[in-house]
Image (cartoon, rainbow, N blue to C red; front, side):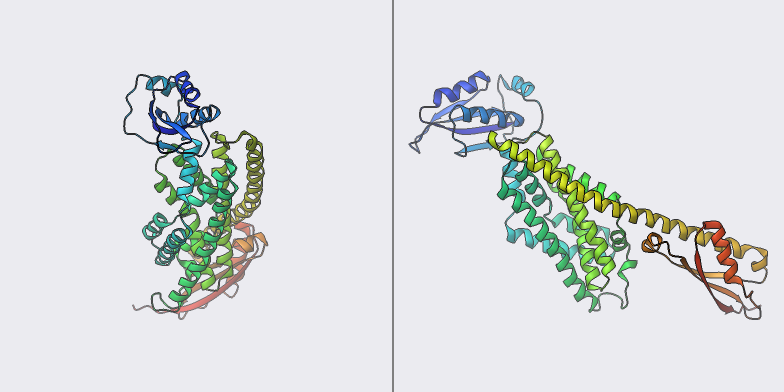
Length: 430
């Protein structure tokens, strides 16, 4: 429920109150003595979804738009007509006026926004390098990225260009700053004693997850955006949903910065791609859901312009997402193929050395390294396989063992291979 207070202009008291009477809304009226342009203050309870249509009717009756309208959330409302109003205005959606106010409050002042963003990026960067999921989630609690996404979509839907542009600018500059901050932190940590020398960040699990972008990340971003929109529309749990949106954006941005710090352009570009597609997915999901929820500009003449803006921007975002999704799908497919090939190579090598021909003379595979990644699959390059084989010191090894392994792998996996075999002598006490 909501409790609405509205100033009634001089000479409009009867027409305004007649609207409330026709709607069977209980109200209270006080004479207004503070300003000469208004004669009364009216206060009435209404379900949250009914605030917008009732305010529109009151404006048609003479209430001036933008002049002293307060919408409160009371604990309890007792009235004879409440049940009737609830059945007439069924639903949990907030009003357009509340939505605009919430969007503005969710996008804080630039100094506050960037301060929290920098802090969350620093924490997320440390969490990535520590391979700590808990630390990364903690950083997301601080990240203020939900507000700008909501602000941009709300501004577009209600045809508030200033609000929309502010949301877009905050998102773009915020994510660029997150990458830059992570790169600076990465440079500092790399040159310090906080990490083992020669650390390859690609071996860190939390970083590795974000340098091999998967199409499922798009679903994460879409779901986060929808959840954020619903939480704002229903006025529930926005802070918690903001964590999900931040998880889709800040860790990949921090990973991109670390790729720059470590001089790994592949890491920087792959994670930056993930940042961009997640940002687009969050925005398109919020934009479409706000429009489908029935939010429109307050002026009837602006509805067509808002509709055009929503359709054109949604189409542009979807085209960009589709193009980038093709890249992600290819990467996802090639990553799956890489995993399958690695598994089959290990199986075939182990099966081969278990055969009497090789096990009988004491040959044992010590290490199998596969130099193959997504790029090799897309370019259809041969799979590079390096194998270290242990053998007794006095035992001669077959000269064609690399060829035998190559043939076996080619027949089993139907791909071209480049096989190199190294040997180490072993000694064992009696």
